[in-house]
Amino acid sequence: MKLLYTVIYVTFFLITLVCKVHGQSDTIFYNEEGEATMIKDTTYYELYGRQDTSVNRRTQYYLTGEIYGKAQLVNQIKEGTYLVYYKNGTVMKKYQCKEGKYENSYFHYFEDGSLKEEGVFLGGRYTPKKLYDKLGKVIFENSGWYSNDFVSGEKKEEGKYVDGERTGIWKEYYKSGKIRQTGKYTNDRKDSVWLGYRETGSLHFKETYKDYNDDLKVYEGISYDSQGLEYRYNDIIQQPAFTKGNFNEFIASKLHYPKKALKEGISGKVFIEFVIEKDGSLSHIKIKKGLHPILDKVALDAVKQIDSFIPGMFRGQPVRLRKILPISFKMRS
Image (cartoon, rainbow, N blue to C red):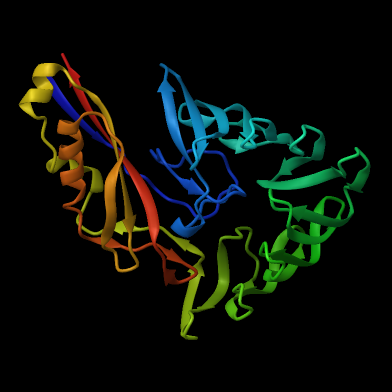
């Protein structure tokens, strides 16, 4: 009998608009607006569900247990209709995916089911075509002043569209109404200087965009911590990095298949949750979803031996990130 230990390294993204599953990620945490996020902003998470020969089902859940989203994966890539739900079970958003990218039309709905927004995806960015009020009246069409709200109703962003492209000065807000960031768009891309603020009003970052098509890469970026110290960067996001070689091989070397589990034919996945701290150490290591006490302990003990990460960076500063690591125990004849 051949014993298999399968470890899937969970990559973590702070911001994403595409629907491709990156690498072999099984879990990513998000805020309520669908942006992958730091631990403190977590609202929902996703896990793969039942796997078929060529089709996977992806299900996303609010942390409180309600279903957030459902999608079909083909060869680990979203394909077809992707639905996002309110906690009461009504559809919030409807997208179409092809070969891992959003495409064609999208629709957003009010909680009562009436249409709120319709638009298209062009070049990886959503472009609203029409906005409606709760009575069905068109309040925006292709060009003009656009305002987008948080799910809970507060204003999230506002600015001007001209022929479907973001143009001029745009502003993004916190739920409190204070400015989160503001800057200029040219031809639907960030341009020149963008300023970001903490909710207290203090300056958080200053970014200069120049001839880039990627809003996650800047010509020059400077962020400031709470003491006013400067951090310079070009990449807004840097993922955590394991410092002792291949992560999968390291974990596999720490695993074993207990004789009792073998005898009883126990197999399946154990999900271990942990936090990578700002200094690269691990904390809050626990069983997120167990399989059997014997195998749970083996998986937990293996993860507890991890002691060397370069922390994730956001705008040049180290951040705490939460991850879930699925470890599979399989027996193959």
